[in-house]
Length: 335
Ligand SMILES: Cc1cc2nc3c(=O)[nH]c(=O)nc-3n(C[C@H](O)[C@H](O)[C@H](O)COP(=O)(O)O)c2cc1C
Image (cartoon, rainbow, N blue to C red; front, side, top):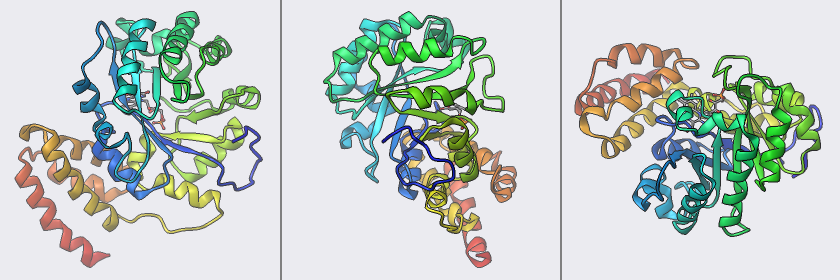
C-alpha cells in the first residue's frame, strides 16, 4: 500500500478498520459487523495496564477471539489494544497478548476519559511525546518483529500545535501503522473532525496513516480520503449507526451503487445481538447493549428510535426477546 491517494480514483487498495469502542463494540458486535463485511481488521476495547502483568482471563474477557486464532468468526483479525503509561509494564502485557495469540497490538493514546487520564493513560500521553515514544519502543522490542504494533493518537491534548512531534514520537518508537482521530482531546467527540490536518503527514509518512473521526457515510470516507490523503480509514460510531457502512464504502470505491441495508434486514440482527448478549451479561444487564445500539441505529433508521421508545423500560431478557418476536412478522410483511 502506498500513500499516493489519487483524488476521485476508485481503488480497492484501501483498508477499513472497525474502531475500538469501550462498552459498545465487543466481540458480539465485532462478530455481527464483520459478518456483514468490508472490514480488514478490528481493534478491541482497551485493556488497562496500571500496576501488574494481567492474567490471561482479562485478555480473554475483552477479546474472546483469542480462543479462535485472534479472528472473528468471519475471519477478521482482532488487534488487542493496551492503555497505560509504564513502558516496561506495557511491554510485559503485550508479551502476554502475543503469547495468547493476538494478531497485533494497538496502543491507545487517544482516550479522553478523566479517570483514565488521571492515572496517566490514554490521551494524556500526547503531552509527553518522549514517554509515548518509550511506550511504543518498549512494546515493539518486547514482541516478535513480525507482530504488528500500531498506535492510535489524537491531534494533541489541548491544541494541535505538537501534532507533528507526537507523530514523530510514535513513528520513531517503531509502530507500523498510526491511526489518527482527527480531533484534540479538548475537542472530545464534537464535530468537525479536522481531516485536512492529516494531509501533510499522510503524504510524507513511511507508515500508513489511518484516518478516523466523523465518518458516517461512504461519501464522508471518500471526502476524508481526498482531504486527508489517507488511504485507510477507521470507522467508529458510524459503523453502529449503519451496520453495512464498511460494505457500502467498498461499493462506493468500486463505483457501484449497491442497495443499502434496510430496516427489515437490520431487525433480525437485533434479535441475534440480544440472544448473544444473554450469555455475556448478567440477566439484569442483558437488555442494555441492545438499547444502546438502538440509540446509535436511530440516527440512520427512524424505526430504531420508535422501537427504543417502546422497549426502553424492559429489563427482563425474556420479555425483550418476546417483544422482538412479536414485531418481527410485522416487519417481514412490510418488507
Ligand atoms: C463510547 C466510546 C468508546 C470508545 N472507546 C475507545 C477505546 O476503547 N479505544 C480507543 O482507541 N478509542 C475509543 N473510542 C474512540 C473511537 O474509536 C473513535 O476514535 C472516535 O469515536 C472517533 O470516531 P467517530 O467520530 O467516527 O466516532 C471510543 C469512542 C466512543 C464514542
